[in-house]
Image 1 (cartoon, one colour):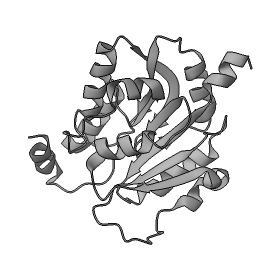
Image 2 (tube, rainbow, N blue to C red):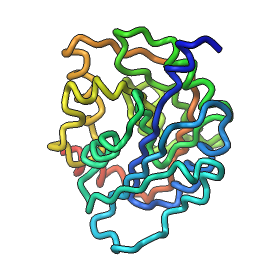
Image 3 (cartoon, rainbow, N blue to C red):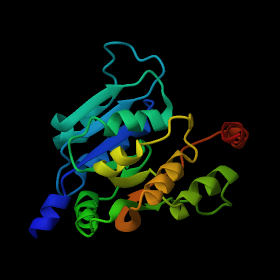
Image 4 (cartoon, rainbow, N blue to C red):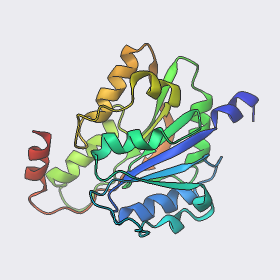
Length: 225
């Protein structure tokens, strides 16, 4: 491995969560993945009223990365605020954001290091490739098709790495976005306006469609409004 590649592999991971059960699968996949270990894994507990001594996040699922885990509590600031708290705690030159409902690939850390190593100094962000498996044997629901759109979305923070210096330059995520809707695109547009470039990498992450009831589309429309 070349020296530039080793330097580029110096990264931290930030995962905002509200304590959903899927977090355990996310952490387990990250811990099993082959490749350079992150400097830190910052798990941002964004539950509105976390108990002061609550220890119920499944940090053990990280396996060999458990000792690198840092937990921050927000009191419920939403995904933009949670990610801001997370990246401001890291000490690495790159921050890889993951959502708590994704599962990185078996060699994701290796592929991330390659993606970052190929980023020239003008590149502020490198987006991962998202795979959204849909059911077979039946027509996908509106909810499932909507989630599948992430595979084509630009700048989705389900798997997105940014240079820490670029995040500092633009002030991070705009916390006036209280829900998980367009806050990632807003950040990317401000990064581009600041003169940086964003490219798509080759690392693969699976984004399962989480179970939902028949009213989920209405709740999403209310949130978007």
